[in-house]
Length: 291
Image (tube, rainbow, N blue to C red; front, side):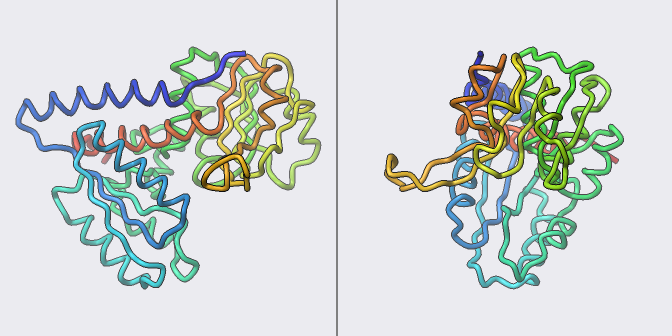
């Protein structure tokens, strides 16, 4: 069993991006600029945004954090997005999800100029991705594909089971895994799937993105399978200062010995999500034309 070290790969990619940024600045081009809108004080969102700001520093980017309280109105948020759309110094920006229930996440996503949508959530980017056109790829799925490539994990003709059908991970990663050049045979499982254990036992690659801690058990995994665990659920713990720990969708302790490769939680997919966002920002700053 080999552990897939997402943090190590992410650090390498950040160094590659920083070298590219240094080259751009030496050529007299402007410093890439990523902005983030954060609403409220959700613990997970606070942590993610802090990691993104730190990654910007490591990559040589300029970053701007715009904060609002939970009672911000949808109109106020849409106005903030409009300003960022029209700010020529901002190359890309994100609105950290989830948002308060009185705000339509879909309306917010669609308000972002797709050419600055470095999260890759806008329907135009999603649509372009689905037919293999250049676009900003959703950060977590792009990070997963990068991990598979950097660990030389064979995907051609592999049976890949994607567990979960979210717009942010499940659907886009299933689409990417079946694209030409990756060439996996993909099955998507979800809450209504029958015989889920039998389906998983035939998988060469399992990508678990359910948000259900420990759902994937040892009896669902065949010997030599590759496991990509996207789950990051906070569970109570008396062993940490914070009083919680992150648990993945995979019962790591019992599943890992059967695998050829497996990602840990934390330290697997999470760092790759952030570095994929950095890569999208670099592409935005280089003004790559997707039209």
